[in-house]
Amino acid sequence: MKKWFVIILKTGVSAGLIWVLLSGVDFQSLKIKFDKINLTLVLVAMGAIMAQIFIGTLRWMSVLKGLGANVMFFALAKLYYIGVFFNQALPGGTGGDAVRVFLSYREGVNFRHAFNGVFLERVATVLALIALVDITQPFFIESLSEEMASVSLTSAIIISLGGIVGVILLTQLYRFPERIQHWSIIRGLGNLGRDLRLIFFSFKRAGPPLFWSLVGHINVSFSVFLLATSLRLNVSLFDCIILVPPVLLILSIPISIGGWGVREGAMVWAFALVGVPKEAALALSLLFGIVVLLTALPGGVVWLVTRKGDNNSSSIPKGAIGAIQDQQEKT
View (cartoon, rainbow, N blue to C red):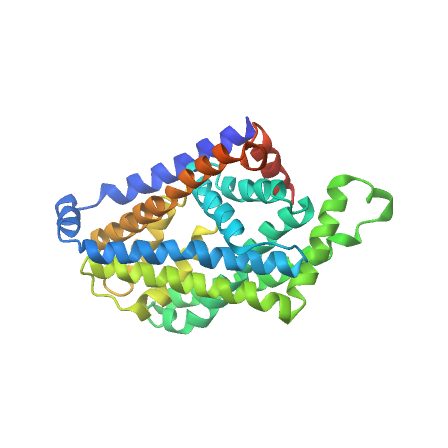
């Protein structure tokens, strides 16, 4: 019941935000934007988004290797792509991560490394995103009014400090009293804290996942630039590198289904700062969402083929995803 309530709530947020955005839109102007689209650039953007599979795999693999797991790139890429598909297909928002945990465990990675590897890869992604937002913040603030600039700067400071404090607190999870360390959830949290220290307290281990995270975020910004150009919007690559990271940071908050609604609202607001009309920014956001969805769909085919070829290692039994999602929520 709790999960269904969360799903219904997220669906309501997505539907409500999209309805609000569409209520004041000139649909004729929106149609004109799509009528004049450059399909060649859209295909190039799809290729750039597809490259995220390989970038994400390298990020995940660098974390697992830092934890001491022995993994192969192409085997991991297959699991990562399947996870991307389930992130789009399942309404809960973390379904793809749970699938990756389960399938990597079934492929021979011990459960501690399987679970913590996905969790810490997500931590690296968010930390790199916060760093990129901080780096681009001075350029972003130039486009804001004095009041909004103050709000933006304060928000960036709070988020940055929150990220640092959050990581530090997670590293202390192994310090629970000994009398309760026999509980499995406490042992799991302790192992998470130890693994987080192992990765992020070592430049040699933290460098690769943070590097690939930054590459991924910049690649997404490049993809948005290609799509904006395909719609003949007057924005530069530099504009996208400045404006897209804050949008991605907002999207990391799991309050909607697949980011729909939240992404559209954030992009309309962000691109308005460089003079992009509401209809044009909305068209860009919708096109980006469609491209992401289309590039994720083949991951479902990979899963079906893998499942058919080897049911013992890649099938997902009923209840497995829910159980792993429960553990992720507790962590």
